[in-house]
Length: 243
Image 1 (cartoon, helix red, strand yellow):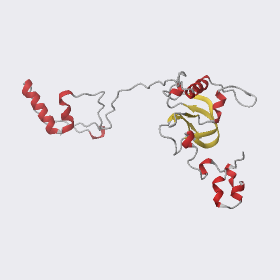
Image 2 (cartoon, rainbow, N blue to C red; image 1 turned 90 degrees about the horizontal axis):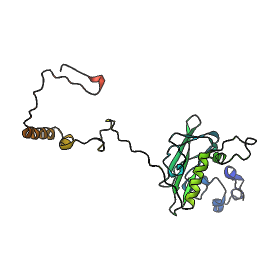
Image 3 (cartoon, rainbow, N blue to C red; image 1 turned 120 degrees about the vertical axis):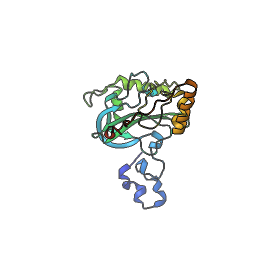
Image 4 (cartoon, rainbow, N blue to C red; image 1 turned 90 degrees about the vertical axis):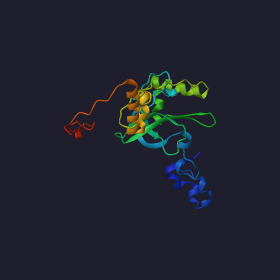
C-alpha cells in the first residue's frame, strides 16, 4: 500500500491530470474527497509534532480511569508525544474528553477521548503516540526513555475489557452545593425561602402583601423607618451614608 499524504502531487492519479479519478488520490484523510475526515471516526486527529510532555487528566470520573486512583489534574509523565492529536470540528456526538493536555507553552492541547458508536462499539483515542511508552519498557533506555506506567496499563485494561463487553463503572463526581450569588440564579438545593418565596420573584407589591398578611396573623408590626437612613450597597465603591 502506498499513501502519499502531503506529497499527494506525486500520486499517479494526480499526475495523470484526469479529474474523474481524483477521488483516488492518497492525500491526507482530512483533505481527501472522501468525507468526513478522520476525527469523525476516531474522535481526534493529528495536530502537530514533535511533542514530548505529560498527559493531564481532565475527567478522572470516566470509566476509562476506573481502578487507577487518578484525580483531575493528575499527570501521566512523559506519555504525550511525539505526535499529538486533538478534538476538531467533526467529533461524534456524545464524545467524552478524559484528558486535555497543554503543550507548546500552553498554547495548544492534546485530547484523550472515548465514545460509543451507534453500532455499540467503544472508540478510544489516547491523542498521543507515546501512550505505548507507558505499557512496557521494551528497548528502553537504549532507544527511548523508561516511562512504564501502571496507570496507563490499568486504563488500557479498562478499554480492552469494554471491547469484550465488561466495561467498568466510572466514579461519579461529588455534588457540590454552593451559591456564589453572582449569577442572579438561586440554587434551590441550598436556599428555600418558605412562605415568602413568591415575594422574591413577584416584586415589591407581593413582598408588602406577604408581610402584611404575616403581620395580621402574628400581631407583629414593622418598625418605622429610621430618620436619615443609611444606604449601603454590596458594591464597596458606592457606599453612601447619611442619605
